[in-house]
Length: 235
Image 1 (cartoon, rainbow, N blue to C red):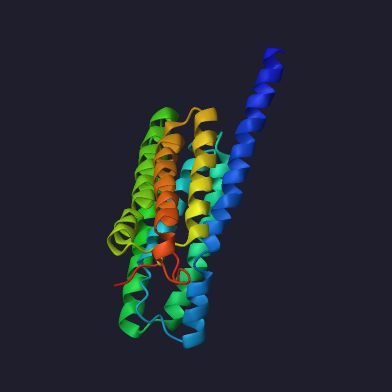
Image 2 (cartoon, rainbow, N blue to C red; image 1 turned 90 degrees about the horizontal axis):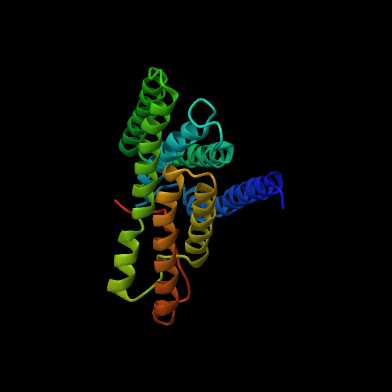
């Protein structure tokens, strides 16, 4: 087998992992739909919090920027998945704003403006860095930190499952999508030799496995099913 053939197989494997990650991420993006159907049906955001969607939007924007050619020219599939993710989060936030009471609406608008302000600051600040390698490291660290904090957020749910011995608030398909997406982008990062991708997704893979183990362990103790997606939190 020639060097060219090995390189071709390597590139195909990397692209396949990235495409798979995009597909599995879609499961995460659509998971809040039942919650927003309930919000629209009841005409109220009730006790649901909009903070997870605000934070997810910021995470998607930072990771989207990291994947662009201006930062890392070999991570187009990172840009695509986070572009789709950012679009979904914006739609969720808009719906939330439509049905939230006035005080929460003002708060959410303030947080949304803050997200765009932070993102613009990161965008402009990184473009001020003339050295391309340093620019990539700067944005890469921000992206990595954002992803790690996002993957660490289910620790609260894991603690809740262990304490209540119930998987009511840890949906199986959401946990499975998280695991499959993390594995895909972990492999993508490894094949692309990009620590800013494989490190956080490696952590996400471990946490995803823990969630599934807990799900099957405590499934018999749960009621009929999980009522709310993992991404939903309460104030």
